[in-house]
Image (cartoon, rainbow, N blue to C red; front, side, top):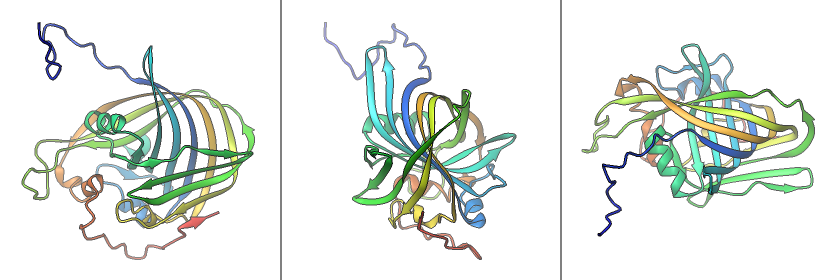
Length: 274
């Protein structure tokens, strides 16, 4: 009997895909940016938090796909602090990833704005830690600092990140073919250790593909090195009007020909902050 692996056998129902268990070492940073820029980054119905803060995480992740399969990747997440209803979280501005496997699955299933990137392994030289994120040959983000004193290990907690599932119109006009959904990622953290990182530094460099330099660093609030387990899952929160997302979707596709929004009164801040 011949096999055709492009088609699933309808007589054998696949079990539902559960959340994914991971072991993570992550450099986590929060910085304060300009309030006007912070608010402009958020598509409705997401609302800016009281604090104009940006979250950056660079992680070395061991994804335990099955009992006998583990995939190791480098991954980064840039989030804009916000809220949806009563839930505080972060709107995912960027998700550079190492490897096609995680990019395709994250974009299609969860609506994550993942892109294949050069996510360097976290460098550790004594107490000094440094990470680098690059795409198209441009290192647009670096973080560095000195690993300091251990902090109290937190109780298990969940972080929330907001994304969108949407399909741009086939004819190239602005808008979408079909519904647009606001999704939420639920990342259950169970850290075994957390260390303060001193003399923290965030370096942003200009890139037309990843213009994070447009979201300036006014002040680094905190940087930490965390190790432990993470379990990831997600859900659809609501169907939203396509007009809410139409001026934001281009960044998912490296469309650099869209005219940039001008922000009146916004401060430039610092591209590098130590």
